[in-house]
Image (cartoon, rainbow, N blue to C red; front, side, top):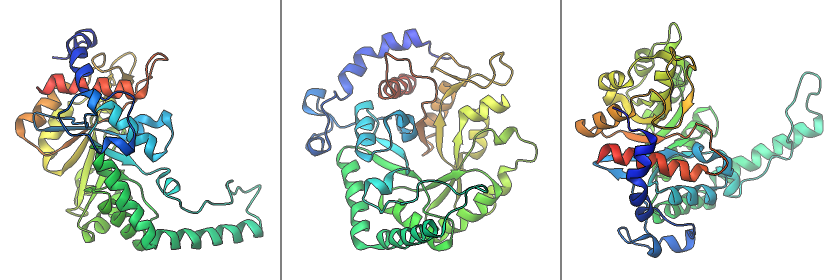
Length: 333
C-alpha cells in the first residue's frame, strides 16, 4: 500500500512544477501575491490537501541555519503553508542582547568572577528586552511576515525558561505568533511542568516522543492525566521504528489528544537495518494508512514533515521537503 518513489516522482513532477514557487521569493514581494496564481506571478504556498494540513517542522531546514528569514524562504520555496517553528535563534534574529560569555563552566574551569558578573548583567538585559513593548511588537510583525507569505505557525518549539514567569512569557509569545501551544519532549516531569502553565494560558502543552514508547514503564496515559491541556506531538516514525507497532492503531485510540503528527519513513525494529530513516516510500512506516485515516475521519490533526533521511549532494533540504509534501498530496487527493 506504499507508493514507490519512482512511480511517485513520475506522477507528481508536472504538478510540482506547476504549484511550487521558484527561487525568486523575498519577504518584501511575496505578500503582494494572491493564492491561486501561477509560479511566475508569485503563488502563495497551500499545503492543505483534502482537508488535511500538511506542514513541516522547521528543523527540516537545519542545514540552512536558524535565521528567521532564511527559514521562511525555505518554507515558501518548499510549498509549505503551516509549520512547527523551532525557536533556536529566534530571539537573536529579533535583536536580543548577546551573552558575552560563550563558553560553559566545567569542574576544571569554572566561571571567573568577571564572567559571573557579565552573565548576571546579560540576564538582566535579556529580561528587560523580552518584556519591552518594542520586543512584543517585533513578534507581532514576525507573525505578520509569515502570514503575509502564506505560512502559519501552528506550534512553537521554544521555552524562555522553566519558572512560572518564564513559562507564562513563553506561552504569551507562542500565542502572539498564532500557535496553539508549545511542544516539549514527552516525560512525566515535562508534562507536570508544562501542562498547568498551558492550561492557565488557554493553550496546549504538546508532548513529542522519540523512542520512549518502547521503554519499560513509559506511561503516556499518566502524562496526559496531569492536565487536560496536555496533548501529543506524536512522532509516528519514531514510534514505529522503536516499537514495530502500527501508529495508525495508536492514532485511532488517542486522536482526540493528538495535536500534530511528525511524518517520516523508517525501518522497524525487526529489520536487519533497524530503526533507520529512509527516503519516503523505501521504508516500512505506514504513511499512506495514517494520512488517509486522518483524512477519512476528518480529525483536525496537523501532519508535519520532519526531514531526517540523508540529503544527497545534488539535492537540498528544500527540494526534499517539497518532494515529501507532494508525496502526501498524491496519497490524499
